[in-house]
Amino acid sequence: MQVITDEKTLRQTLKGAEKIALVPTMGNLHQGHISLVKQALATGAKVVVSIYVNPLQFGPKEDFSRYPRTLQQDLSLLQNEGVDIVFAPDHLTMYPNFDSTQQSTGQQVMIALPEVANHLCGAHRPGHFNGVATVVLKLFNLVFSNGCLEPIAVFGKKDYQQLWLIKMMVQQLNLPITILSGETMRNPSGLAMSSRNGYLTAEQQQQASSMYQVLQQVAHGLQQKPDFAYWQQWAKQSLVEQGWQLDYIEICQQHSLQAAQKEDKHIVILAAGYIANTRLIDNLECNL
Image (tube, rainbow, N blue to C red; front, side):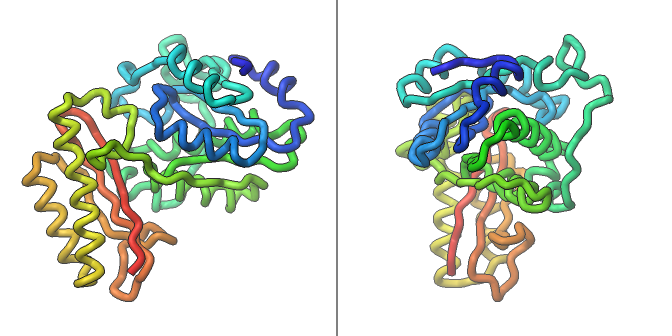
């Protein structure tokens, strides 16, 4: 396994590789990430895992400075999986217009996204998805633009809105990249695996597992009584009663992320909220 930190070496190393699968991450890897790596390896492509904590997707009061950085542990995990390349750039490589404190100088080109990026998580994290789209497009350019004929990128369904927006960006910008999606990996309690789970005590993690339990109850309830407004309100009340400081719980169309209408059969239930000071998200697809 080769660990690369600069653009020139990355491009030289990937030159001539016809099939590449990229798994973008922010590090602090867990079995959810590893499942995406396994999915990439199964394609038979040369596998690149990027590790980069992207400052553009963090708001001023979010956890950029304390986000877990565990590079050596991550490299050990990836070596065991048989990854070909780990790309772990510094901020200067990714954002030459950032200053020494990793803050933008105001000269950074950003990807603009449609209005759907300002709903759900975007309503509570302004600019977050613009930062995500910008770094993902930069990674696509760095990894795939040197003669790759069959580019593949793998993202998890846990970040459902992110996955949806990246698919839209790839389609609308005519990027010849296949986007694969991996199912959400969960702890035995049902809690979706997340690097931020490490902020929680064991008791708080158990409490946080209630979000998935509520999503399951809503999905089951919709099969019996397809009343979106009723179940959305029921879920909101249930989560608040179980100690969640809720950002949102919404029932949306899978294909548009707009609010589900009574005739819709393919829906997704999305939720986000806080346990103590830790923000967590989850979702569950449901076909009626």
